[in-house]
Image (cartoon, rainbow, N blue to C red; front, side):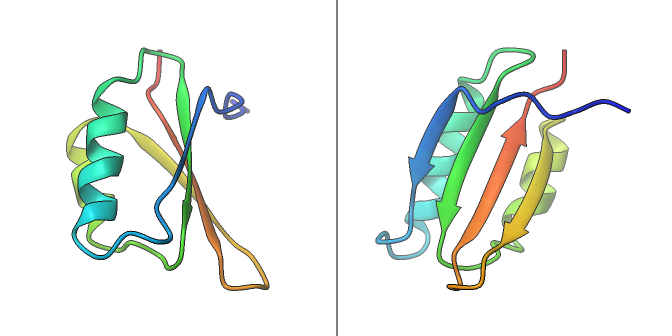
Length: 78
């Protein structure tokens, strides 16, 4: 079983109106080195983002919290 690396970057997009969260996330993931990851704090599950990440060969884990916050851990495989 392969575990997700600890996030090397963190990005909070909760206060940004659409489409800024997607733009900021895609810009940040473009800079990810192999084996690194990005932790994103979001106000909702960003369904349109998932295909864009998959196209780029990125992996994503989604965690929903009781307060409504969504945490994504996006990683670039080695």
